[in-house]
Amino acid sequence: MSKALSPEELDAQEEAHRAELTRRAAKLFSGRVEFLLSAPQLKFLPEPTVPEIAFCGRSNVGKSSLLNAITGRKAIARASVTPGRTQELNFFEVGEPTLFRLVDMPGYGYAKAPLAVVEKWKKLIKTYLRGRQVLNRTLMLVDSRHGLKDVDRDMMAMLDETAVSYRVVLTKADKIKASALDAVVAATAEEMAKHPAAFPEMHITSAEKGMGIAELRAAVLGDAGV
Image (cartoon, rainbow, N blue to C red):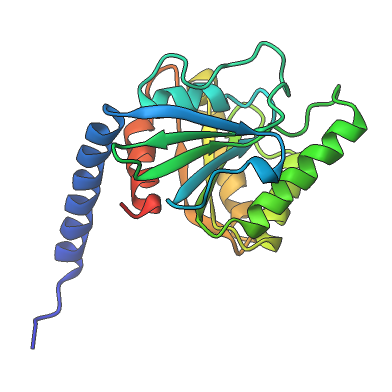
């Protein structure tokens, strides 16, 4: 009968696991990462042959910059000068052969988008979330400077409803003072506790400064299960 591990030994084991994931993730993302396709409608989705990790967030939250930082590329995901421009699901393959895919979802909450376009986005996102069996996790990006907005809460409710587990990722954390960031983290954690599909761990990142990128990259690898 094996001896139960002490809390210290469990912590050390977890730390070693995280370190190994971080090392593997850095190596994997330094290899093949390629754009696969854009799907404006569900009929254009690629075959569900590998796990998928999706990224969602309000327009101008820094999603493209974060994707570029995670993959170590300068422009694999184009940062649009017009928020809300991305209206398709964009798929990127990772690994050779492909081990999993990253999915860039359309930004939401852009005030100037026509109502018909907004409704089209909502339908596409909700149907994808509900019916994509290979979707292992969604990363919901929140701008640290603004915290959760009503459109973010709507997205969290949609993720709860579709039973899609998601991580909350704070972006642009280098753009505000530490005290303000602490307040946003506390308020966000309080709201996350109310949502059953929210993963308990929050990620605090800056694509520009590289803050939290290695840890998030490792989390993506772990969520993909490879």
